Length: 177
Image (cartoon, rainbow, N blue to C red; front, side, top):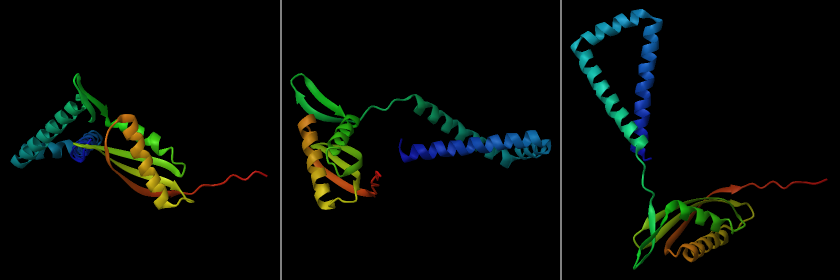
C-alpha cells in the first residue's frame, strides 16, 4: 500500500469519525439537530454537504475496490528458455536473502528489501549486528555471502548489496553460579 492510499484511508476514517461524533451529539442534545437542519437549509450548507457527500462516496468506493483487488506479486526473471520464462517472487528472494544473512554469525537481525532491475536485482539490507563485530569485515562478509547464495540458488545476477547497520545489539551474558 503506497502513501497516497494510506492518506486516502486516513482521510476517509477521519470523515467517518466526525460523522459518528455528530450523530452522537445530535442524539444526546436534540438542539444540535435544530442547528444542523437550519444550517443545511442554507445555500452554503447545501454546497458543503454535497461536497462532503461526494468525497465520502469517492473515498468509500475506492476503499471498497481496493479491498477486493489483489495486487500481482512482483517478480524477478530467473531465465528464459525455449519453453517460456521462469520467474521468482520478490518475497521468495527476500526469504533467500534472510537465510543467507543468518549464516553470518555476527548478524543478529536482518530486514531485506529486494528490487528487481532489468539486468538482475538490487538488495538493500537493514542489519543489526553484535557489539564485538568489526563492522567493515562483517558487512563485507554479509554482502559476499548474500550475493553468492542468491546467485547460486536462484541463478539471478545480484547487481548490488547495500547494507545499513541500524542497530548494534547489546548481548547480555548469562551468569551461572
